[in-house]
Amino acid sequence: MKKVILAILFIFLLPSTVFAYEKRSGDFVNIHSDEIVEGSLFVNANILDIDGIVNGDVLCVSPKVEISGTVNGDIICAGENFNMSGTSTGDIRLVFGSAKIDGVVEGNTTVVADYLEVQDTAKLGGEFFVLANEAKLAGEVESDLYGYVKKASISSFVGGNISMRQGNGFFSDGEFAEFKLLSGATVDGDFNFKSRQEPILEDGVIVNGEERKTITSDKKENYSGDIFWSFVLIFSNILIALVLIALFKNFVNSVSGIIKKQTVKSLWLGILAFLLIPISIILLLLTMIGIPLAIISLFIFLGIALISKSIVSIVLGEKILELLRSKKKYSLNINAVVGAIALYFLIATPFIGSFISFLSIVLVLGAVLQYFRTSLSK
Image (cartoon, rainbow, N blue to C red):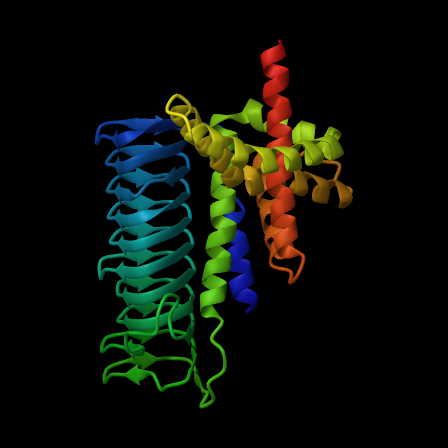
């Protein structure tokens, strides 16, 4: 459990080089083969294709990501499909529906995916944490391999320990759960495994350390799904915060300042708006002229609700760091990371979690209204 907590924390501790970056967006963003990007790169696109060189970190939110070039830094991305045949000299941290790695990662690798495939030519230089429904792992892992899976087949060389727990899956129990170490797999350290069924070790598997298998016959609740969704919720909150900071930093600073200085006013104004805006939208929908305005108002209202937790995370993170009596002034990115983790545990608290979620929405709603009123009056 300690390693899981550390992995979750590591994925959110973004490197300082992300604070100075180049922004690219659009339907298709391509770093062509003869292009060199100096510094970190932030991308929001339907498709990201890196064939060239990025001398910095890559932070992206893209449904499809292809990396065949070189990233001299970390890769931190979320989306639907990820395919890497290139090289990363830093860590990679991924949240994808499907991920395929066929390249070189010199740092640590963290992957949360429905389906993960690591091909036999891949080389992962650091620790490898995986959280997946199905994983097919080959290639070379120079350090430890650990995590949670439902169905896995492993033929890798692992230079450290394998510590895996097998669960029922994160989304459904329909498919048969199975864990295999295939012929040719080599574990230079220990093999630690916990499940309700025996793992399959084919002939030719080499384990140089100890084998420790914990097979439970009882049907206790499987918490791997809860861990997965907790991980995704925190990560998505931080990604939204990072996008806001990257694209609308002045707006984020202004709204956060209003929340800190005029908390009560923002709260009551937000509650009033929360009650009146839906009624206004319904009334506008009753008239032909008001329909476009109603649709625009609805999207604005939903947008504010979507970003509310991220903005509150930034404010909460700053307050937590102040309470720790840290003399150092941290960036908005670090505030967002600290605040998002703290806010998740507050919202997950029974009985008061829903109330805190509601307060987050109305607080940000009230602050945004004050921000626009001040901006329009200038």
